[in-house]
Image (cartoon, rainbow, N blue to C red; front, top):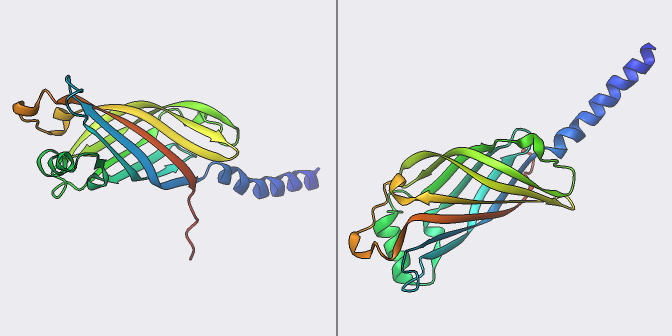
Length: 193
């Protein structure tokens, strides 16, 4: 009986790293974030920007995550609009990054080793324009053939982040921006040494 118990303990110690690996850490340096702040008269001008250089690290074991992006990474179709976005509204020289630190509120519902699309709630703190606020959003984790994708949609009230829109252009820009997030995540390489 002692040998069977000892064998089970050794087997458990052998399999434990495999279980931890199945719920390891994942990352991307090429997350896509689309920013849309079309105003009430959105047929006048589209306030639409995109970056494909957002970074994310996700710890699948506990759902902790951190996102970061350079504000100047957002590209607009109109160069003058991009300049105003960076210089007048987001002041990206003074506040160069947007950061989200938080977690998946329901990480146990994601079956990291099984294909499927898992709805998640994300909660945490978002820092934009030097202002940090609590945020929550709905999103999903999709797993297919061991490939992990994350997506979420969030609305951000510009005034909450002290982003001032002059009244002369207020009809062109929405008071609340819609932000769509998409990322394919890959295993984070283990640190050596």
